[in-house]
Image (tube, rainbow, N blue to C red; front, side):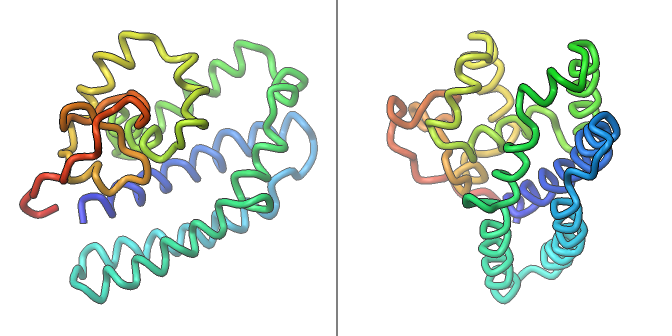
Length: 201
């Protein structure tokens, strides 16, 4: 259940970051309604996340079964050519930000977005690990090219240790080396170890 809480927290923060910062400021600058469909999906997401939290408290096999159904529906909404993420990416391009925002404004937006992580009660380091461990190797290349070596080799593994290997073992693309959660690609990492057992996980 600890792993169930992580995506719920991540999605709660993510949709607030978009609604309160990215979508709001982008529509204000573009003087247009750009995210009507996405905002409706966010409203539905709020209800879904509330249901997930209820299931966390309830626990049990039946709750896990319902969680599986909810997770599949979320994947269908988010992914694919017509999915939520793809539609956002077509609007929020580098060209869009260069046209509507000064560089310092983009930096301020980034700061405000990251500040929301802590304000909403999620550990920043855990949030980063969660995101990276749900990217494919191809998607992770963007961050490989931009993340400082000290972050990838030293700081990131320390962030990963804030949760056990048992928890990260449930992520879609965890990365391991010698049984330790690390930054590097699965192509060079050791085979995913059997997650250790953790009480109350």
